Length: 564
Image (cartoon, rainbow, N blue to C red; front, side):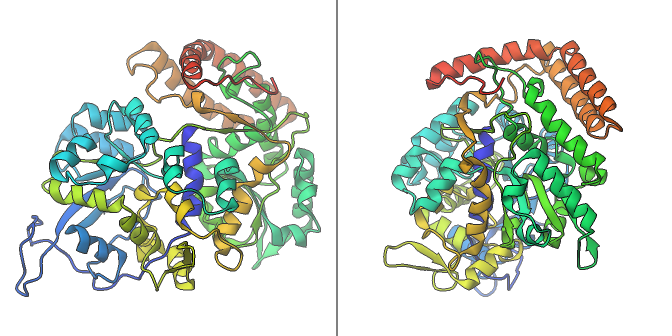
């Protein structure tokens, strides 16, 4: 769950930034691809060195060609650090490809960005990456990171990784807010109530159908609205309206996850013991909602097989009435007609719940420096620059006077050019460097936006704070439920059982949603409950509960199930 908050910032921060378009896209390598360090060309200019940056995040799309023009963000970074970058971001199976690199030991990248904690630990255990304090003391002893990095964030990273090995993205913590306090209530709302998981509602289509947000605030009301949309045969540009869009091939995480939350499922029972949310009675209600939507023809089964690009394309088409899933992955904020009704109230009368991690996060994206790099000095300076205030102002916001101005209070206000270039970050480079986005810095630097100054940010806040701000939603501290992905030894029976359960439940949930009748739905759901217990889910929960109770005691929290 701890990744859940940091992901909120992704949409809000990524849409806040701006940059120049690429020009003068020069290469900085000799014909053999070897680094020339600080060698000069015939004109006497310093030739920058090239580093390879590998990432497992397939939907992170920085500019594919690195410009050395100092009027671009990339070129300004090169001017400051002497580095250019070649990105290696596989379209799929990035974790697998990184594992193969670890095994082969050849062509290892200079910089590695991952999200998977297990993969991160493999990098550390293989001694492939630097402990960053050690790295900086050796190669950039004056680095600000040695003195001003938020202590509470470093503590989280040290507990997770056994040292400060990874620079974290989207830093958000109390220590960070002591340095960069939010500039307005807008950002306080995001910290207190923001959530990536939610429901997008197309206000244009809502109005066209003669509906209001109040009409779709309940489970039965929303399903009735879907039927009305279908009966009206609404079209956009000649194509039929999609009543419900689910979150692609990974829908069982964000789509089902939000429905579990809004219908009240928690990873803990009324006695405070850990329980897989699959076993919570409210999960049956969430599955039932998707089954009814499928049976009513409100979403096409093919939605459950497409990639994120297809989801984004549907969102951008204007013909989606509602989307349920991870709003941060949709670029919805580019169109201001998106809103949200917040919680979807279960017909069973349970209370919606929202888990918020009250501890400092250790980063959604985790960036490592390879020990095999031939440019340690430059990478140390680069790491220090990218995480500095000067560096963040550049790569997040672009150039003062072009992409932003500063108001009388010294707060940043984006220009029209800044907003435009932020939308095109895949070519402009501004806001493209997600691994170095710093949520607290941004919330403490920008002027709180309005419809006039930053409609995209207002749109994002309207949607992403709606669920947490719903008067029915109960917010609880879920910090103890952030289970490490390697809680069980890879060779243990528990790890094997966990893998079997994962494989089984993914297939069975799809069957349940695609059931032909109410009777089949009940039969398939009951089969899942029996089989999950046969596969050892209750024994796994007992082991997980030991970890949860230890963390509850350590963090001083005591969370109990609200509904069941």
